Amino acid sequence: MAAVQLRRRGIPFRIFEKQPVVGGKFCYSSMGAAAVSNTGLDISRFHGRHARFVSDALAALDADRLRAWFQQAGVELQDAPYYGLVKPAGGGAEVIGALLEQVEDALETRAVSGVRKADAGFTVELADGENLPARAVVLATGGANLPQLGGGDDGYRIAQSLGHTLAPVFPALVGVRVHEEWPLRLPGLWMDVRLRLLEGRRELAEAAGSMLFTLSGLTGEAVFNLSHAIEPALARGAELELAVNFFPSLRAEEVALWLFRVFGERTREAAHEAIDHILPRSLGAALLARQKVKRGARVMQLSERQREALLGEMLDTRLKLRGTLGMRAAEGVTGGVSLREVNPRSLESRLVPGLYIAGQLLDISADWGGFEQHFALAAGLLAGNSVPQ
Ligand SMILES: Cc1cc2nc3c(=O)[nH]c(=O)nc-3n(C[C@H](O)[C@H](O)[C@H](O)COP(=O)(O)OP(=O)(O)OC[C@H]3O[C@@H](n4cnc5c(N)ncnc54)[C@H](O)[C@@H]3O)c2cc1C
Image 1 (tube, helix red, strand yellow):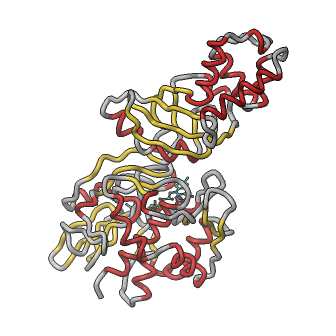
Image 2 (cartoon, helix red, strand yellow):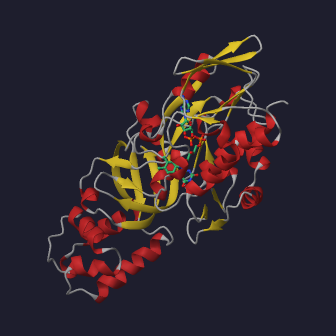
Image 3 (cartoon, helix red, strand yellow):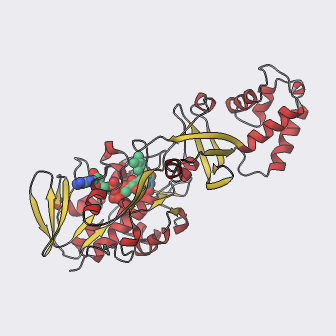
């Protein structure tokens, strides 16, 4: 996106990409998403101590401009009927294709190994040994996640070598691992939930949305949206719990009444079957097993304490967190180049004039569902428009 702006403005440039396929992460689809924006685009969906940093980039390319921009480039962005996703019909590859079409002649599949300050700007060092002079550099090497798709620490290293500081980098937009084994026995179960990330009584993050049980842990929108807070807390030695409410859109009294009615009408039925009227059977069975209700036990055999504890689990199941599924599974990162050292209006480094830093390399993370790509595109546009003639 930065290169497209430079072309439009008649500024000569070269693009270096270390992977044979450009835009690997953009082309990857997550939970059927591949969203480049979201109808709920707002700075409240961005995380980090200085999340307001994104406002200038988002003003330069807001939701309407993004749509119009891609429409002009021949890509129709559509609103998906779920999660507020805004996506191209042809997936991320269509977006990358439309960008590349305009600048492909300047693209070289070569890795950059370093960038040094030089008298009249910079020396760009390529991994194949060639050194090139540059008046300005736009550093947009993405985050450390998914090394199998080009993620790595090259950009962080280059920024540090030029004097920038890094907020520690951790996986974000990622599934979690829990100590309990019962959730791993429900693979494929998908539910709407409300989640709270707790350190003792302190709530570190909160999120609502879908949650998917898998063989290795829990994933899905709600899990992704609080995952940014997990690894930084674990790194300082925190013990974390996930509190799961399986009835996010009901009040506790409504759930209690529902359970009371269902059990009241089915006193002779096996509890494992009666629970089917409230929860997916596999989850209901797991929650009953946690209350030591034997298989085949009838509803009327449940003690008052067991019923209360079951209700408690339905509204507030506690799971001990072991960590996230790690960088190889993460769709994003938290941490990166310190935002204090970059001018949000131009994305030019405050420490090294002529250096522009864009996209996921910056200490910004966002909710799942198109926010990250929108910011990456908007930041590219802002940087490309800020390089002086
Ligand atoms: C599986 C997956 C699904 C995702 N789904 C979504 C989604 O649906 N919606 C959303 O908003 N976000 C999504 N994301 C996040 C989103 O893709 C990223 O936020 C976005 O790609 C960041 O853009 P970027 O330009 O900063 O970095 P990137 O897209 O990572 O691009 C950086 C490029 O720099 C190259 N590079 C790195 N080092 C060097 C070097 N030394 N020399 C030359 N080239 C180098 C890399 O190969 C890469 O191509 C997803 C991410 C993943 C991994």
